[in-house]
Length: 232
Length: 86
Length: 118
Image (cartoon, rainbow over all chains, first blue to last red):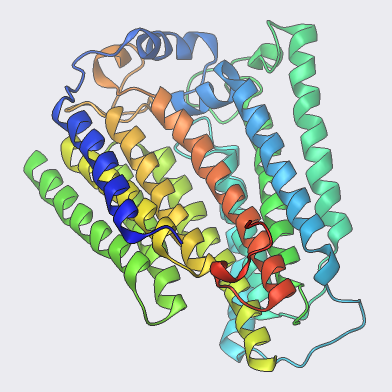
């Protein structure tokens, strides 16, 4: 292990740099050029009320494509690394039956949580929310199912089918943007509509929905892989 | 009105630092360490809301405080079960 | 208020760094990385905050015409959104590797893994 003296020296050095940064920090009073462009032109260009959603999906949509790719790689590598230590199918372990409250509560709550997740990513262009938050809420519904019934078999094929189809459609919509509108992932392939309606902002709700499904499927597959590992 | 926000930020900052120290230094048990990191994420999501970033607050609460803590507890469970049997 | 959030973020980064360097248990090291990650995100959002302005969402509080005068910087929030999701992906990867290491040697103490030392 690294000796304690060098650790303290490193922490003191980095702490001195941070203290210098904090002392010299002057907050802005006006928006800088990039933020001013985004604040002025978001409604006219994309028709979305949530400026952060418009940046993530259309203005900097290529970064979102990169992030979705990184998540896909993560889910695939977790599945690959844990492949050698998973159940052999018919091996049932003895777990105590989950309590009545958990089982009945899960049966009641899982559809509501799924509904909340879908609401969050369908309304991503109007209110705070979007694909990533909605996907995480979907994955927490799957987690509740896992906790209530630990020996339940989840169909890996269904989860990976949802994930790959959503990713393919996401890139397909981006390609449609090249054919019919300004560029990759341009949202003007669908009409912009009026500000504040559900069916507005072009293709942003559609893109966000597929991102939400893909992210939800990826987190679920990570959780299911981790829960299926066999005891050594 | 902004005084309330300043005091809340101060309180949240102090609580975050205490939870962070607990997650690094708690000698006794691993579940306390994992729960302290979940607490840091939760308090950070409230601080994000005070800093006028509702999207980020929702993401941090759902992903940082929810999924990460569960991932840790899954792996801890597998490791513990192996330690008791082997 | 942004100074408080900045200072908290910096201190969380230092705490996470300290924990990652001095703990021996692999799971504790991963928890320290998570705490440092949260600190970095806090610093980035605190830099984008401007006093007296509202969140970058156009609704009843902020009309579409005067967003330039009423709204804070939306770019750090878009960056941190990506960073949080990738942070949890990296944590899941680290946990999968930790579990595989545990399967090999049945210990989570990092000083016992000495194959790469000369």
